Every structure is written in C-alpha cells, then in structure tokens.
Length: 481
Picture 1 (cartoon, one colour):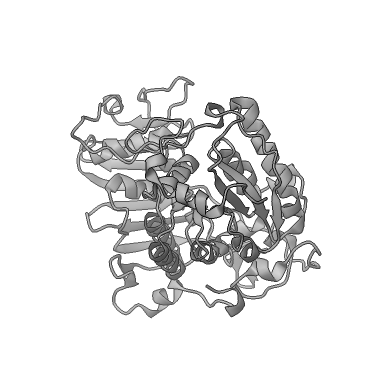
Picture 2 (cartoon, helix red, strand yellow):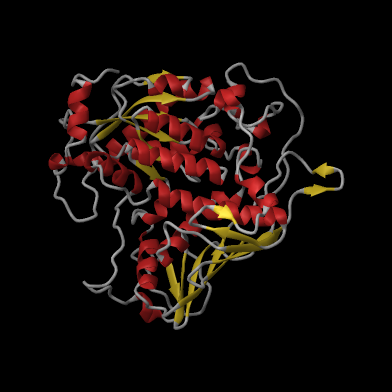
C-alpha cells in the first residue's frame, strides 16, 4: 500500500528529532514511541512503515505482536520464501493488531498488506522505512546487509550471525550506511524482564564487590530428526532458503513444519538443531545470557581472550545419529582481560550468576530459586532476582552512580531510535560482540582445547590455523553479500 504522504516527506519527519515528542513526554533514555491507545483512530499520518522479512514462529508470535502495540508504526508488507507462510502473513499481522487494539485501543490492521516471496524485491519498495528480520540464523547477516544497503532500518533477531566474519561484515555495513539496527536482545529492556538491567546495575556499582566469575546456564538440545529425503514442497523456494550455505537435499526436519496454521507456524523448526543453519543453544540462548554477562561487566565492545571446554555431539563411529547435529551436553569457560572467568554450561540452571568478592547475584527470566534466602518478590509473586544477601537487592542506585541505558521495550526503543537517529539499547556492534563470544565457545567445543583470542583485532593468536578456519564458511556466490 502506498502511503498518502510523499515518501520524502515521511523520511524527513523520521529524521527530525525535534518532532519526537508527538503525543508524549521525552525522558532521558526512555522511548517516545507510545502505545496505540494514546492516539486511537486519528494516529499521526507520519508513520514508520515496517515490513516483515520472515513469517515464522518468532516473527508471528513476538515481533509482529510487539510492533502492533505502537501507533507510530504499521506493518505494511510481509515476505517469506515459503508461499504458504507468506500468504498467511497479512492475516497474522491483522490478528496481532486486533489483539493489541482489544487490549489497548488504536490501530486495527485495516489496511492493505502487500505480500512478497523475495525479500530483495521487497527492499526496492521505497515506501518501506524499516524491516524486522526473523529468519533462520544463517540468513541474518546477509539479509541484514542487503537491508541497510537498501536504506532500511532494521530490527534483527539474534544471533547477529553464524560466523564471526559475517558478523563483522554486517557491523561495518551498518556503520557505513548510518542505518539503525536493533538486535533482538530484549533482556536489555525492562519490559518484560526488568531484573536483568537491575542485576547489571547492581553489579556495575559494586554491590557484590569485585566480580571474579560469571556462570551462564543454558538449555540443551537433543539429537534426532528424520534423514529421509523428501520432495521439495511446491510452495517453498528451497534453494533460496538454503541461501549461501551448501546445497543439501530437502527433508522437513531440516527446515520447518509445512503446517501453515497458527499452531504449525509456532512449532519449533528443525533448522535450529542443524549446524548448517544454527549453532544450537550456545547462540540460541547464549546470545541472550552472554550478552547480559557483557553488560554487567561493561564489556559491550570486547570479548574473551582465552576459551576452552568440551561438548558432546550426536554422533558415533558411523556418523550422525539422525539429522540434527548441534552440540549436546557441554561446559565451556572463558577468561576476559579484566580477570573475570565465564563458565557456560547446560548443566547449570538457566540464568546468569555474577559472583563477586562480597556476594553474588543470580538473574533469570522465570521463577527459579537456587538458595534458601528470601529474595524480593514482585507484585505477581515471581522472584526474578536471587542473591547471597537479600539486602543487595534492596540497594538504591544513587544519582551519581552508574545508570544503564533504560529502554521500556525492545521494539519501542527501536522505533524511537529510527525517529531520533540515536543508538538503540542493543546496537549491532554490541550484538556482534555477544554473538562472537558465543561462537568462540562453539569453536572451543569443536577443537577441544584452549584457544587464544584477540578481541581488538578479532583474530586468534599463535597462528591457530584450525580455529581461524572456523571464523568463516564458504558461501554460494548467488546468495552472498
């Protein structure tokens, strides 16, 4: 759908920080994008036109639903290489808008939503200001580069990339083009998990003394998956879905469910457990929790200097047991220049534990307990933080102490940054560094020995050819950057 306003007029508005306060007050570090209910039917005409690249599980159930809450943006186009999913896209967009409108009022998705089967064609639409990319991990960096080169601002699901080389290419492209890119590292925003920012502020302000260890607990992934070759569905552009990765035969467990219903789209896809397309839980959850470890240390633009560990992989002397081949049980460790050791394992309870000279703080998304202390509970009885001394959690961060970037909600912060042209809470350089740390842990699993990393040069020390070979992968030219 073409916006009735001229495209150049809308873009001028989006770049004009003076108009940020439309319908809201401006608070330092807080989003000015407000819920749809503030505006109702007569929303401002100068909207951010957003397109959805990918119409799968995270896109439909998370990104679309969050963007639908805000009157300053509308999803005007959808794209997917699976035509069934793409064709369901407008319905899923409208469903999310209707749900948001029923709860908060505002936009109802009652406009034409264009459907694309090729994201490159979509990117040529000059009425589109921004895109959210919710694709398999192997597509993140390449599609992200194409989007920013096309002049679009981007919300990119984590992890930033599947190799460190590709992550650096993406980060450099964002810097060169001046586009806004927000990583989907939503644990940095206070909605829905304020405990992560709170924990990091307490750590950064010395409430547990000198930090010496961070423990990161991640879920595990089982092996399995059918290896039976299947005909490629007529509705799926499978070659383009493989993208820059090597050609391999089609089987549904390699890709995603062919059930295009709401239930089918929301099922967990098989590609998550296949190394050609994803690295497993070390990036799946690690991109969130290791990111919080970096935030708590104040090392957003750095990384570990030594990494070692072990992992089991679903294989025997005859080869892989089933299709899925990402790591299983694992324990890896990393040393940072500040002397902090980070332990990452699926044998630890899901969450992040900062351990210091005067106590510790453990933070997670859910209602977990690890000690017999009495943590402070929120109004719903959920105990998002635990500590060696409950008084730590009651501590007030003073006016002159460290206050971290405050973002109410990740997508709102992204939309606000598009208008202000100010850096979002999770910019690409931060996301790339968090992702790089995850991938370094994966490389340590593979080589099964200690590796030495230079985070400034982003290269291995000691002329480590085996580890260096894992910083990149061959790419098919027709789907390359």
